[in-house]
Length: 301
Image (cartoon, rainbow, N blue to C red; front, side):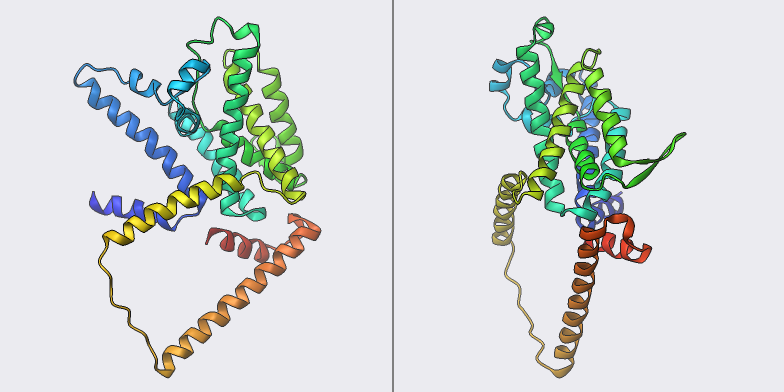
């Protein structure tokens, strides 16, 4: 059992941002299920506890639980809900990393979730049709965050083709348009809140790509905040560890190894820069299989 946890920790640390987000979402879901079993043994329901992590539509409840603006985008209503969102995150997250950085994906996940939450809250507090549902309405799921990543990828590379089951190859621009129309037409359905949040995620993906093309990054503030938090924990971790002796290798062989390593890294960096330039000018479809492989390996590091 210890070995399994060690393997999971190692995979999490070595994985890219897509893998890490999937791990976090799955871990939250498993933790909630385990807590449900534990509380059930004491005849205590978990719904009251989980409710504190769901995003409420009512503004007064939101003021008492502001953390739900973030916590809701890591919660899921069931196994199939989780599986669907994680598959989308995996497929479109890998494509997204061909064109943007890991930090952009991390930031857009949060921005997409926040914009989805904002649109959901506004709709339920503005439109009379939701008046009777307002107090008890809550939102959960990573759908808005994942759709922001999917739509951003589709706008960046609209002619890239994906294979859909029973349909075949479809260009991303048509796939994105179908998603948007489906969510608009589903606003009056039983899951109106979810589809409204999806539209917020779609808007975030469009805003990110359009802004990025004009020189500004809507995810910048998210990454600044997350880096600051990460640096704070790293500093605390360093203080708690004992200082270790550093051994400097001054012999000729040591310098040779360093030189060869730096030369190899420089060559790899130049190759990736050339591929990115080709991608920028001619699009993803112009790359060879070898270039696609190298680009994917570079984005995973």
